[in-house]
Amino acid sequence: MITQLDKIQTITQAITDNISQVIIGKEAVIEKLLICLCAKGHVLIEDVPGIGKTTLVHALSKSLDLDFKRIQFTVDLMPSDITGFNMYHPKHGEFIFQQGAIMSNLILADEINRSSPKTQSALLEVMSEQQVSVDGQTYEVPSPFMVLATQNAIEYLGTFPLPEAQLDRFLMKIKLGYPNLSEEKQILELDSQKEIKDKLTTILSKDDVLWLQEQVNDVECHDSIKKYIVEILAATREHDKITVGASPRAGQMLLKASKAKALLNGRNYVVVDDVKSLVIDVLAHRMSAPSDVNLSSELTNILKAIVAPK
Image (tube, rainbow, N blue to C red; front, side, top):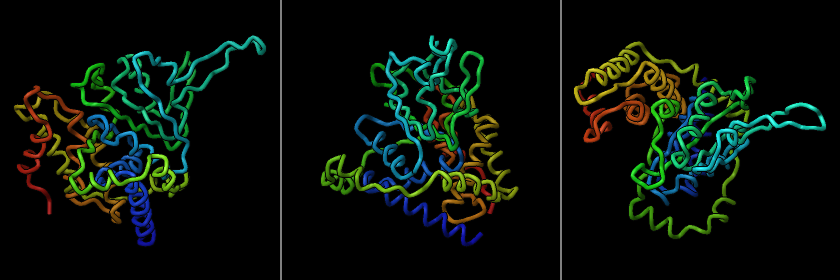
């Protein structure tokens, strides 16, 4: 296992270095993408336009030898464009299924909040069950499968907020944030986008990704840390400022993400800091509170109030 852990750390660093040629100073964000990949989860990246959301996803896709498709979400995008549809072929005298864009390993759902809720809902089944149903027939998507969605902040015109059921399908909701002064100077000195993308190399094969996902299942988590996660969930439900607290499924997702983080950091066991570092990214978007309540701040306060296991 030690040899495998060393191999995983080497892989993690190689992908991080590769993507960092394009996305400057965002190693923590890259790690979160890799955690979602290893945990078989999906990720929602929300931030202002021009911050590098789409470039980040393209850089990840270049690092992985997986089939990649981009779906540009617009107001006129139809659910069948995503899932596929049955078309009648006179020559064969029957309906034949035409695959939608979702039939791929990595999906960039670009500006997902620019399409109608009806179209957004076309992703619900496939994100939870890795299959689509068309006219009563079920079709499995290839494995591994991951949706990386981007959206602009909802205060921008022409957007539709994602419904709660859709948000719950994402393992994490993350932000890139603006670069600092030094990082922004490095960005200004970068070559053209084409030249940057040409620098990126493929690090992992499909079998490598599947292998990594399997390794997450072997990561141990002590009962005291599981109890700690349960206490965090309970605190969100009992909080007087939080309308809807974290669900049991949110707890399962937090545990899975913590195991993936431990693995990528060369450990076969979860520590408290794995959980703490992911609480906001995994839980906040699954909860509800009045508009004047900052859920990230309240979760931080909850973590301060709960005694963590040693």
